[in-house]
Length: 141
Image 1 (spheres, rainbow, N blue to C red):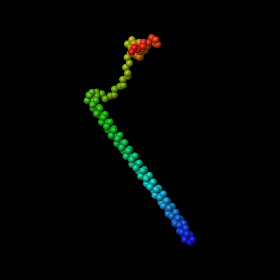
Image 2: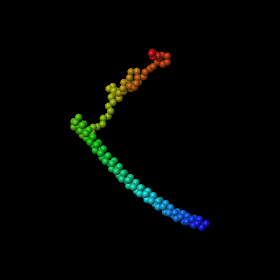
Image 3: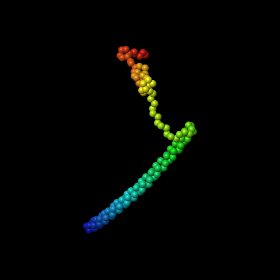
Image 4: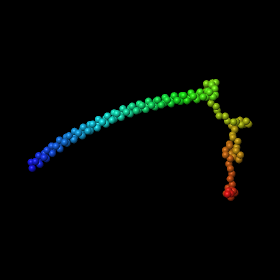
């Protein structure tokens, strides 16, 4: 029986020793994963900062490009207008016109549109009267 006792003692010692190695390996693994996650987080922050700055620069460049194209288009239209209608005699803005409403020569009031034949005054659509019931003609066909 001595050999079984020795084998069990040796096995118990190996189990205890390997448990310590497993714990050390697990702690090392946790530490390594934490370092990797921190590195990923820093890389992501840097990448987002760079792309944000790049997008802002691209938008600014695009705005400047569009502004230049709009200015060129405006100048082209202005030149075409000048070619068709000649140079402007006055650079002052024209006053806004008020809408012209015809007035009645007799009363001086604002004239209404003449009534449509058989319709309402004011030029609305003419009211058609249709025969009701038996008086209505049936379509032939």
